[in-house]
Image (cartoon, helix red, strand yellow):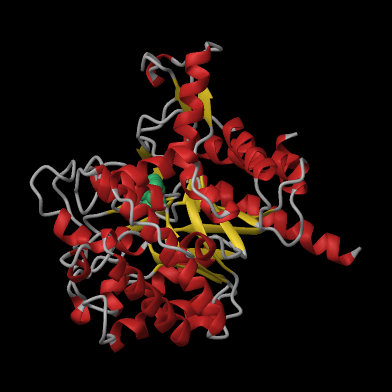
Length: 450
Ligand code: FCB
């Protein structure tokens, strides 16, 4: 069965690897780059577990060509990356930075020259600090700034992209960034959280409309992080809790995107905390049809009304992040989405695990990660078999990188990075993934030949 996995995917299925700008680029001030909220946040004492920052990261900005060769060596179809907004527009408005635009142009052209599709995300969290100083995503002004940014990038790169994504994981920006202060900009304010969620959604919808009006034919969409919510027991209180958690984490975003309305629980909260936040027409804009949906999946969520469920006692293996490894959750999630909404083509835009990678004789035998990838790819195959319109799968991540508040201690890469030397080494999982993608490709040729 294991060896047949590659046969379960259609010829046009896209296999890729993913990264984001702040996590790999480094070069924090090169070529006139502006400050981002993550540059600022890393300087807050205690904010990052190992007191590190993104100043150097994987030094990708200075190693573009060799990193492009690295991606090509994996034989993947696609690479998902993001643009650092403060690099190309240091103040988040007005003037564009030519040197940085040229960098992303080299990235996109370099991918295409190697036969790899460029999948671009506009906002993977590193908002220009200058916009944060004016309220950031809590302010409706940022919405218009984002639309201008999207248009500027489209005019420069648009026709060369495979897909364009507005935001990565609005829930994380809203909740981790503004409710519990765990991520930049480090606020703890539920009202701000709801404002941020709404403005991210609104800017997404407006950007899609503006891009279409600008003649953009690249498939456009959004990437959401999702975990299916399961009740810890059959008790009605646990079931109710799972339902509520699902609304507050997932349907807060998917209902407006696909149905043009907020779930009642969220609508009531907005009404109570900021009654003028949602203006007439906003929800219709947010529901502008998507050309693609990106799903980031790492683990499931188990809800218990009394908070008694603990992942440590669930019996499932845990990753180095302390997240349960639960591949069937990915199938369940995709089936649930398919049943609830009229889905566009869906790509798993992130999936992977942090593990304590054993390094022996310059090799990394990360069997846990290979198992993780194989079982989750099988879960995607199952969703496909049951009719979910799956279009692609991307591993998080191409290489070890700056894992936000966890710093460099958590390694998600299928390529190991030695941060002292910046040497990249393919882990066993990278060899496995490369061989797996090659089998998919070989079968693609066989299918075409028939
Ligand atoms: C996701 C982020 C990504 C990475 C993974 C582990 O939430 O989108 O940048 O940090 O988690």
